Length: 372
Image 1 (cartoon, rainbow, N blue to C red):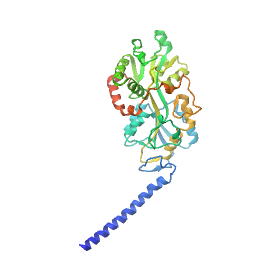
Image 2 (image 1 turned 180 degrees about the vertical axis):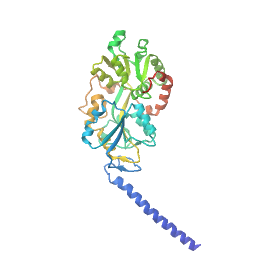
Image 3 (image 1 turned 90 degrees about the horizontal axis):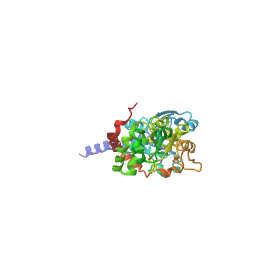
Image 4 (image 1 turned 30 degrees about the horizontal axis):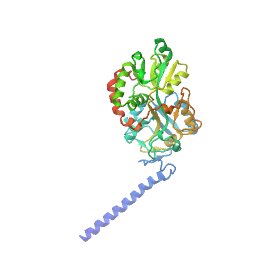
């Protein structure tokens, strides 16, 4: 028994030595990935495959309006001319659904300008990698994740607005609506379009805003009445503003920037922020959780909150995540836009999103335009 025990002891010792050597080798690999990029340690949670410092190709998913993306990217391309950007752009609902469908095999490296409520849903599914970009301390606390490192960082906010064609309404002898309650008056029947909240971030922030403003029961009762006056639910937050601009449907529930742009382009429209207050959401950025994180993904997120690109955001949005002495009030706003916003719990909006969309679709989806 003693000889056998001694032999077993030697075997166990040999195995232990082998395991120690293997673990040392694995540990050295992991340590070199982190230690070789000290500037990023502390900003990012651990990843399985480490950090890729060589790649020059970046896939960016975004719900930013497609006609302003290239304007925003001017300073990025000047700073990183050797990076190939693959921009995948669609409406908020479509991009959110695409990201969720790719959960087990993520294709995006970063998300840029997606609704914070959508990013919170992704975070609830364990899909975001914590990263606090350079300059995050300058971001207003309302516009960023409270965790460290941050899972999402905002760049601007957009809010519910009514876009009304004054020529068409004057022909009909109908005043421009000023309140949510105005929209359910019988004279507006068949004149209103609104974004479908399942496909549009503007649609969802409007529905969620009504629920938070009125309470759940009263909000659904209100939307039942509003539905009577809706001509069509569309799949874009900007389309109701465009339809109002052409006069095809004279009232569009849209968002401020798009209505103001229609007016600047010569459309005879008034942009009205409802007296009761506007629902809103935050356009935000995040790093996708993947086996290997690209350094250029972090670089992109750093750039996305620089002063240079913030100035570009401010050309289109009155509310941006960094307040400076140079922050300007865009045309079409008559007062501090922050005072127009309702009290909004983004976490509650994200948590209840699936249930709200299911209930909305059951009640009103029959009036939605066909999906292209």
